[in-house]
Structure formats: structure tokens, C-alpha cells
Picture 1: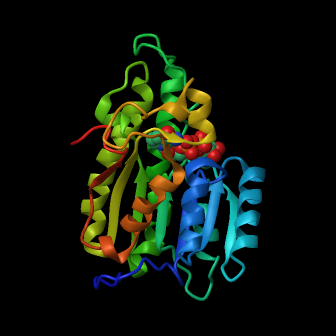
Picture 2: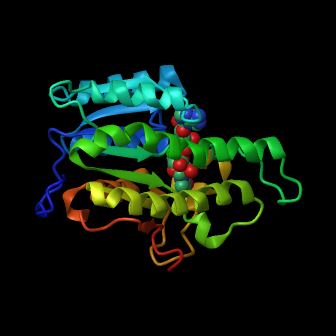
Length: 263
Ligand SMILES: NC(=O)c1ccc[n+]([C@@H]2O[C@H](COP(=O)([O-])OP(=O)(O)OC[C@H]3O[C@@H](n4cnc5c(N)ncnc54)[C@H](O)[C@@H]3O)[C@@H](O)[C@H]2O)c1
């Protein structure tokens, strides 16, 4: 069971953190932030070579910790189960997974079109990666988290609030993530496991820069904080949600968008 006594600092030493979709972008930034807070980190991605490289870079920076890069396809239960076993083995002396960050998604490569024109196969694919993926990964880590408690952070999107047009499949998948978060929070709360969603607004990553013609200028004229977000603006919320500071917070959606929209 996770210690309910709030720590004054976010310290993940002696914890194993598993981040999916960690080959680049936000996932890589989450992995780096948890490593900087002392965690042993498993970076996982379908882009096997890129995620191994990302993990090697991080391991060079944080030599004291165990850092590993592993291949996974989050749409496949067997692949998720194998990843969870390998992640638990990262520190065999404790054999557990303390934090799962469900970050893998299809995002920038998606077609933007009216809902009546969206390709049905693309709808199925986005649901498989963005919604079924977090569901399968949570099932895979559950046996390890049941032993000692833990935290699951599901990466959703602030687009669920805005209902951005021409992106119905992506937004529906991320709205599903928020519902899944609430349901799993109820089921896992009695076992000392928190489940929360983190909903970033547009954040400058390789993916979003390729998506918007003026991503870097996004936010300069709208919202409470008048600038574009970097990955560094988002990672603190993930650390918080996964830490003992948030031990009494579960089933929630934390929107980190510089005050573009309020709920
Ligand atoms: N960047 C933004 O503006 C923004 C805003 C809101 C939410 N998000 C969310 O943040 C997360 C990261 O976004 P990003 O901008 O870093 O995008 P990204 O495309 O760089 O990251 C997604 C990662 O998921 C991996 N992936 C895709 N399919 C997979 C599969 N089947 N199994 C395992 N891994 C798979 C990709 O290889 C990629 O590395 C996503 O969930 C995205 O929806 C991003």
C-alpha cells in the first residue's frame, strides 16, 4: 500500500516507472522527468530502435539508475503482458511496477476530416491504440500493482473539452480514456492504486509541430498564459499525479493547457 503521508519533495528513488510511447515527444519527456526524480524507468514503444536509443541516452545521463528501452505494441495483450513482466524484472529484488504512464497514441498522422468522411479503418485503429492500449496496459500491470499499490496516469487531451472539429475519432478515443480512468479508479482504489488522466493542450513535440502550420505560435494570442507549451510544461503534472502528494486524488482529469479552457 502506498504511503499516504505526503512527502515534501517528489522523490521516485526505489520506484519502477513504465512509460509507453516513450521513443520521443511527451513520452520521452515523462521518462526523463521520472529519471531526474530518481526512478528506475522502462521506456516502451512500437518504434523499437528509437526507444532503445532514447533509453540509452537517458541511461548515460542517470548512471545510478536502471533504465531500459523495450518494444511493445499496446494493441496486443500478449505484448503488454510481456512488457509488464520485463518491467517488473528491471529491479528483480522488488519485482514490482509502481507507476504506469499510458502515453502511447496515434496522433499527428491521423486524417483531419468531417466525421461523416472519416475512414472506418482509421477509426478502429485509433480506438485500438489510444483507448484499448491503456486498457490492456493497465490489465498487464495490475498484478504487480496489487502487491504494493501504485499509480496509473492516462494521457488524454484537452481537445475533449474543446471538441475540436474534424478530429472526431481522436477526440472520442481520448474521451474514452477519461471514462476508463474513472471506472478503473473505482475498481483499483481499494487496492491502494490511483488512476488519473492528464489532459495536455497543444504541446510542442515533433508530432504536433508536423501537425499545425504554426504550432510554435499557438497560444500566443489565446488563453490565460500567452505562449505555446513545451513538454517541460506538462511533465510536472505527471510527477505529481504519480506521487504520494496525490495519494488522495483519483479518477480525476488534470487539464494542463495554460488556461486555454476552464472546466
Ligand atoms: N503534443 C501535443 O500537442 C498533445 C496534446 C494533447 C495530448 N497529447 C497526447 O500526448 C501523447 C504523446 O504525444 P506526442 O506529441 O509526444 O506524440 P508522439 O507521436 O511523438 O508519441 C506517441 C508515441 O506512441 C507510439 N505508439 C504509437 N502506436 C503505438 C503502439 N501500438 N504501441 C506502442 N507505442 C505506440 C509512437 O511510436 C510514438 O512514439 C499522446 O497520447 C497524445 O495523444 C499530445
